[in-house]
Image 1 (cartoon, rainbow, N blue to C red):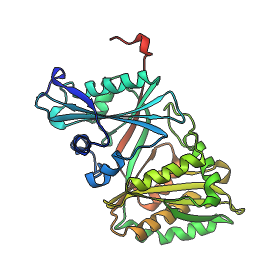
Image 2 (image 1 turned 60 degrees about the vertical axis):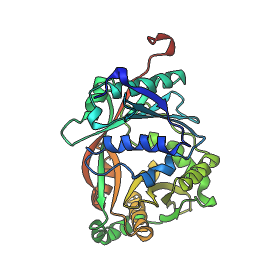
Image 3 (image 1 turned 135 degrees about the horizontal axis):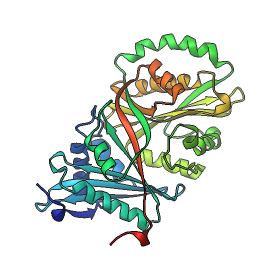
Image 4 (image 1 turned 90 degrees about the vertical axis):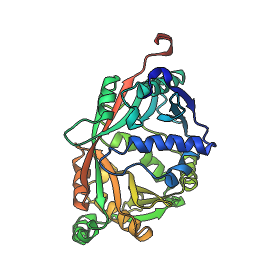
Length: 345
């Protein structure tokens, strides 16, 4: 068994496939106790890990023991365009190496890098069964990361749920009025770029995020187009539906991402409707449009995963109507980081 004194940490070179694979393998083993098969396959994850972005600075850290066995992994994500105080941290420990100081060593390394970069808040996400704790939630609590936002992870079974959707079409039709829904994949039509950027800029403050120390993000057409290029380079398809006002302006969106190499599972990235346009079943209309398009493009897709806060009554109602079921708790945890000059060496 490894001890903290045996652990050696190194930064993974994104161009080094064996190191990337070792990092991925630790995360895969650490995720086996999740409520479902949530960790992407190597075929899906490999290209994304190797695809850099300019709006985020990502550092992958690998921990090996005295026998050079990978036992821990970490990821530090720093936005370069907004939220300059925030550092997103992820820590993974192989199950047979837990409670040996591996996770603490990885987390301390990530925190130190965040402080050097001038970040003052570390934010992470951990998962736990409904009504119980997990190794991850206990680790976060012990390391000074209180829960800032409670969410639920939900799954939709695409083998059974679509049979119930025709009954929802009538409900949407009764409330939609002059609003419409349009969809696209991978590239935002030029006519909607400006409106879509405006929606993305307000997304984080329009959805319940508890006490998470988020600020609105900055989305420009240039950043949006880079997101499109990164998605393509990562081997993923980005499926989007927009809600349009009677005047043809975008007032809401929902998005789903899926790996072309492993299309068994899709993930909802975000859904919102501008406050002044709510009450027309636009969330339901967009999600039904997007999920049907997902099945057209990837008929073998088995499940869609999403997450939303328990207090988000409107989105919970939409997801329940579509057939989503709760499978685990998703906990956003955060910690205020001490300034560099006050940290012990």
